[in-house]
Amino acid sequence: MMMDWAHFTPLWSLIGGLFVGLAATLFILFHGRIMGVSGILGGLIRPLRGDIGWRVIFLLGLVSAPIAAKILGVMPAIDIESSPVQLILAGLLVGFGTATGSGCTSGHGVCGIARLSPRSITATLTFMATGILTVWLMRHSGFGG
Amino acid sequence: MTHFIRRISEYLVGLLFGVGLIVGGMTNPSKVIGFLDLFGTWDPSLAFVMGGAVIVSFIGFRLAKRRSFSLLGRVIMLDDSKPIDVRLLLGSALFGIGWGLSGFCPGPALAALGTGEWKAILFVAAMVLGSWLAGRIKPITL
Image 1 (spheres, each protein chain N blue to C red):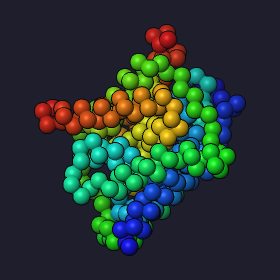
Image 2 (cartoon, chains in turn brown, blue):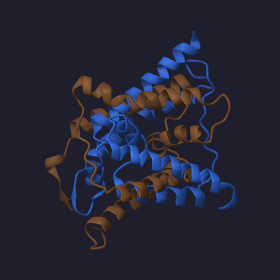
Image 3 (cartoon, one colour):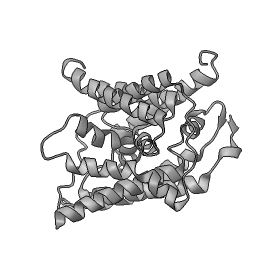
Image 4 (cartoon, rainbow over the protein chains, first blue to last red):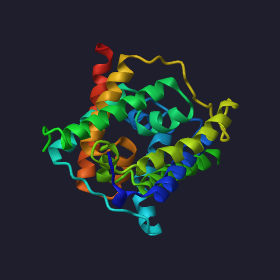
């Protein structure tokens, strides 16, 4: 393994992580909910009466974050290397997978691990493993482009 | 009035979460792929996002476990009764493949959507379709 020191941003990433953790903390303490994005979005795709408003508002906050980041002057570049076909396939897998596995990086990876949930720890190890394997297949195995 | 406070608070938490993802580097797919590229030139930055987030929310969930109602009077929903089953493993495995393929997971993809970047819009549209399909297929499989 070689380290990519050129792109290594431990301080900013830690600060970002503390913000994410604070948001998850405020969400459970003030709203009683786990801050899992795939689940919050899923509740709008499969809506139940009286369980919609908070989801919409939370997601609006999330979607408007780049505006705040630009005002604060902390908006980094967004480099999307994937082709449109790759993005569509990836989006379908992420949507289908997180709905089937009841969670993503925020719900299982942050909130679940913080709760020491065996289910979420299993889910996180699984998607980390297949994610690492996929990048290996794309970049180093000779199969990818 | 409580309703209004709740709504403002939900919005601000979403905003804080999104800014955290942006500042941490999660909304940049090439950085995410660099993190997952353990066998190439590895950028471990995003482990710091996860580490920082878990440490803070560990305390948050400890506090929440002692309560039945949230500070704004809602039932605290912490259900740990679900089992580790095929759905969890299969779903998570498929999610990881999509994550590795694109460098996007749901939260950062929605934050990136707010930049108006067309590739993020395309990804989110496919993600919503994928989630919808899972809901349609759910009753007949697994």
